[in-house]
Structure formats: structure tokens, C-alpha cells
Length: 230
View 1 (cartoon, rainbow, N blue to C red):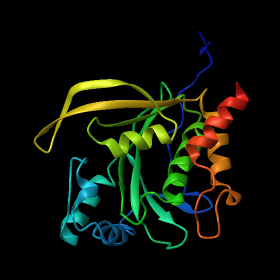
View 2: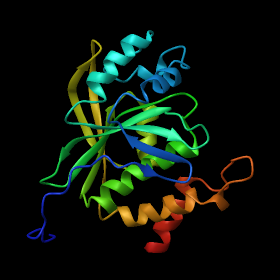
View 3: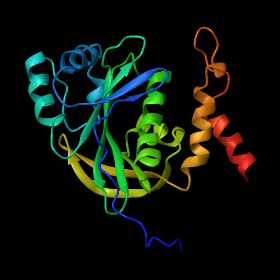
């Protein structure tokens, strides 16, 4: 069992932007990005991006603005605007939430990406940047990912990003009038260095063709990294 006698409470996530090669994460401190987010989310005509969230969809700009003011600027969660470099405009959000500084634990949640951001290099790099902040900058021990057990895209994303499945919380919540069984995933600080190396290799420019197609998948690279470390 590891000795944690010298472990001290970790810093709060903070509000400095995090810049990567294809995307910047901007902790939301005011309403400057709200119009951009509403426009980006409105490109999802069917409202599918809201299906597994406890709120939305928002058809009117004023309705979204009111929601964003009370939610994205709340006191206990640090929401980040996801700003791809190619557009310079916010196209999604993700939060660090349920932060337990005493035990070095936080969670990525409230993920909502506009259709144009989904399944892009920028989307993957955004999560990598959040992980880098949590583990390298702040020194947390554990990063969690939780989702509705029926949300297959979110469950697949968790596995692809390196989170390990830990179990199912049955009848955990009631969301939009339906039961939610919650699937739990996590990454530990001991797992991060190997995972970080895989992300860095996948994100490198030489892994992509001129038209942006990947040569090797993140799963393949992480498997190779794991094999070399064994």
C-alpha cells in the first residue's frame, strides 16, 4: 500500500486557459462565448446532443443565455469552452466537477460538443489538455468519468480515452423523467504517464495525412505503448 502521509490537499482547478496544437480550453468566467456556443449547439437540429444531459435542448437564444448564466458560471464547477484553432469560436463545453481537493479527485462531466466538433482531433486534444491539467499541473490522484449506462457513445469515448470501467450504480438518478443507471470510469495518476505518452504520439502531426486522416488510431498507439512498458 502506497504511503500518503505527505499527501496534501490539491489546488483547485483554476481559470488559466490551456492551449494545445488544435484547440484551446478557456475556463468560463463570463458570458463572452455564450452566443458562439448557442450558435454551435443550434446546428444540431434534432437536439440529440442534449439527449443524455439533465437539461436542454434550448431553441431560443434567451433561454440558452439564462441557462448558461446560472450553470456555466456556477460556484462549484469549472466549465471550459472548447475553442478549435481553425475557427477561434467556442464549439463545446466540458467541466471539472465534484472536485475533492483533500483526496485529489475530480471528474470530467457536462460534456456537450456541437456536431462539428465531435470526432475531431480538437475534441480528443481537449480531453488530453484537461487530463494534463488534472495530473501534471495540479497533482490529482484520480480523474473520473460517469455517464448514463445507456449512453453508448459516452461509454465508448471513456474507454477510447483511457478510462477504466469500475462498475454500475443502479437506479442512481432520475433524469428527464427516466431512470439512470450510472456507469463509472476512472484514470489513476499511476496510469497517466503511459497514457500521456500514447496521446502525445497520436496527436503528433506526423500521425496525420495532409487531409487530416489518422495513420494510427489512439487505441493502437496506447496498446503499443503498454506493450513496450510491460
